[in-house]
Image (cartoon, rainbow, N blue to C red; front, side, top):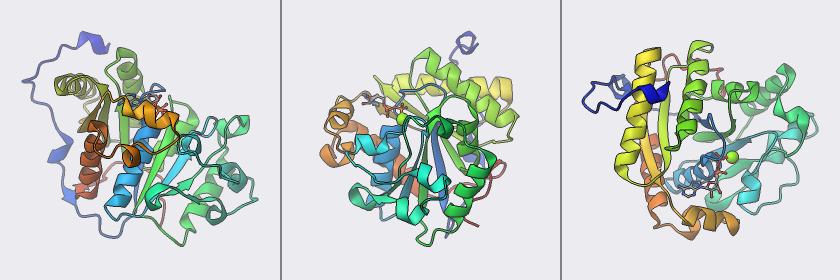
Length: 285
Ligand SMILES: Nc1ncnc2c1ncn2[C@@H]1O[C@H](COP(=O)(O)OP(=O)(O)O)[C@@H](O)[C@H]1O
Ligand SMILES: [Mg+2]
């Protein structure tokens, strides 16, 4: 379907930036980092973005919401004692479970290979919400690293976020899968605000074309405007850092991908369009 749409650069796209902007004041910004297809870079983006937000003096918590196949701790070389599974079983509180990561970021780890975590029950969702609402040390930002696809967990974690960053790569399957996710969240869950982060591009022009293809599809078929948040080039330092189980932004602070992520972090710290119609389950009330 997406392939049928030719890139017409002069098409007047409705942009989300036309919306009213508000200063965030004391509100906690809950941002999901999500995708239709797996392996597009969500986890690496989430942890590095968290670190860069912390560098800008923002208290940041990352929630590893890839519940069946969690790996934030793995890519950072951390070995947490407890994780979300213990919280949802009522054995531990969030405070006892959250660990410190590089640069002062806080991490709520999840579990790997536990089947029941791959689809949270209503009761488990309520426990998580209660625990988050009861957190004393509230962050400025909570980043949620979701798993890929359109399963119930993905939809839920996108619903508790006030902003959704959809990560795509130039691969056509990544685009069609991301479109499917946006469509479900918009049509079935009334979520209206999406921003696109294009990863693994070879040139800035490629990033622009990917964004235009997606924006034209959402405009044309859903009458929905999406925001262009930025792009990240293919960067060998990313797999290099993963292999060393160290944070990219710490190891290679001057690499092009870190510079792009820093620009994204700066954007997130600016006044953002109002979250009208985000269709969210409100956290941190
Ligand atoms: N911009 C990039 N350039 C090169 N490799 C990347 C880039 N972004 C991610 N990767 C690699 O892609 C793989 C998948 O990344 P990951 O963050 O685990 O994706 P996801 O969380 O979406 O499954 C990792 O091996 C990572 O090193
Ligand atoms: Mg991941």
